[in-house]
Image 1 (cartoon, rainbow, N blue to C red):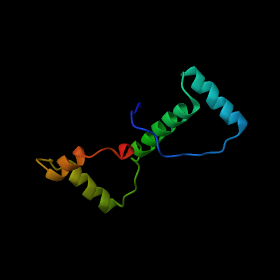
Image 2 (image 1 turned 135 degrees about the horizontal axis):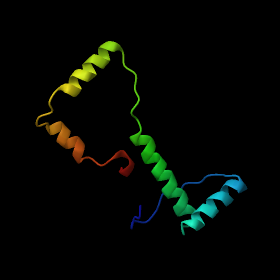
Image 3 (image 1 turned 90 degrees about the horizontal axis):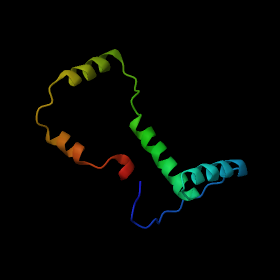
Image 4 (image 1 turned 180 degrees about the vertical axis):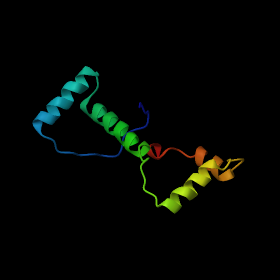
Length: 92
């Protein structure tokens, strides 16, 4: 996740020394700075969380309506084309 733009947003966190040392060791193995390692790991986890929103609860009637929509052929949909052209949430 290399970006050429200047980083302007500041993120501060407090950690235990043992946590910092662990992160530093892992960053060294990857030949990265602590900041780069932490930012890369945090962004990867954020993407995973956003992509993993797949569990939701529906009542029987809602599930049947949902299933009917899934079985309906898509065809040409301007709304779908617009949605697919948008940036993913983690890139916004």
